[in-house]
Image 1: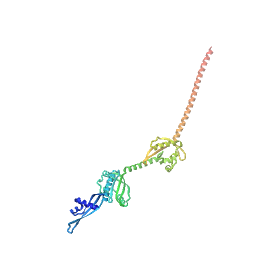
Image 2: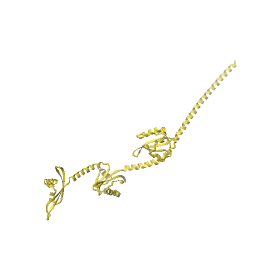
Image 3: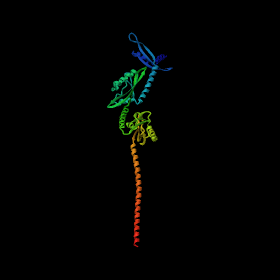
Image 4: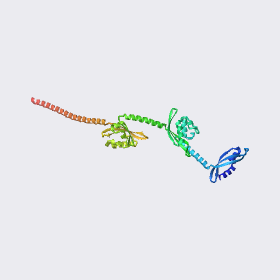
Length: 376
């Protein structure tokens, strides 16, 4: 049915029929035609070749008509998919390219083009080999591509490259694309993780400095994450009597060494921190592993810990200071009592002296009166 329709169409449009072209130049011609029939749109591929006589003159044309409707629909669908794919990859914040089994670049997204431009690399890359566009890539990368095409297994690596003395660290994923169980292309996705790696390295240095200072501190220093001790310095072990393994145990409850009368205060402060509130320093008492009571003052702050918040605590043993304060308090009380006694004694002494003076004056008056009487 399709062949008959094609023949009718050929009569109407002779100028574009393959066999007409063949008669003109004696060559084989292939054309594709879109045909509207009762069942809908169909596509035909027509190949015409010349039939020549013994003298080389064309005496006829042979045409082969093939129904390529399904193939054409697949091509249209693929083209539509590729356009959607192109739109999608251009919106990605990752750099991306697709290469064939010869490692020639078939597609590159806008992000990677931006990278190429900023690093002074080629931006006209379609059809060029990956290692031509990126000559700094190592032979190890080439082996990775070979392995993916051979095994069909994806890979994930970190790579460091220097551009104008600037280090760029990328996380690279290579993902195979299959066709009938064979790897025909590889998608390479790259993410710039330079800042993240540098931040991680800075954090490592900061943590090393923190631990170095913390371990030499005269105070107890700890980190509490969600109610669990995840770090305790050497002083915590020495003063409290617990080992670090005991502190870090899942079964360890930090409230177990708090004096009972301070449990509510400490729990309240902990809850405030869990709500990301700051808490001013406060005093309380702890009990060591062997039951010794220590008076302490604690200063706590919220810190970043594994992309979350944790409590950094510094505990200072003020037991001796408290004892000294109590002794000073007792001494002051005794001194006040002694002063009071002395004041009372002074009052009594002064009163007695005044009385003696009064008696002496009265005595003198009596003597004078007596003398007057003696003269009479």
